[in-house]
Image 1 (cartoon, rainbow, N blue to C red):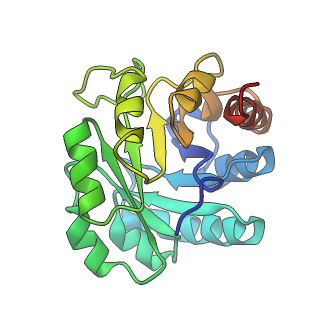
Image 2 (tube, helix red, strand yellow; image 1 turned 135 degrees about the vertical axis):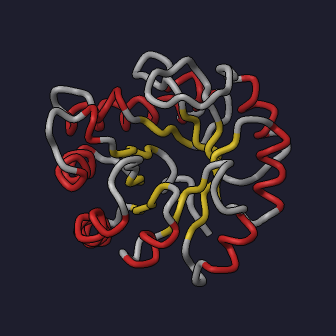
Length: 215
């Protein structure tokens, strides 16, 4: 079973924000800063082009005890021996992917409503991405920002880890954690930072602080 610590801070790779860095270089810096999960995301390159890099990332993450997930591409996740795959609403249905994934591999699903989240949980998701929580220019989802209320609604109904995504910054990451999110997924605020390692460390510290019980 996936732990809360695994879902604390997911850094999603996207070289278009990273000033020429490769996926592996992004990952190495994020892992050094304390990322607990890495999601390889590339909407342009094909699986054949990404496989070698994905295998290097998988080995690095294994060595450092960091969870490695591949976005969208179940075939690439299996070929690289990643820890799991993360699917969107237009990808394979969770139930179909669950039947293909070997035992112990993780299945994450992006959801944008309470109904989608409940359905993904029913179909075997191990954790849920929920968003966009805030406005974001990173990805055109077609969904309006949900705010933190949807996190509260889902936390009251679902025991699975919830990873908030969409417009997450250092100034609002504490808000999503306090609303009940297990963790946060970040792209531009980390991958686009001048110092990816320092940015990751700052997010990790902010999440840790927000998760502490209030006295």
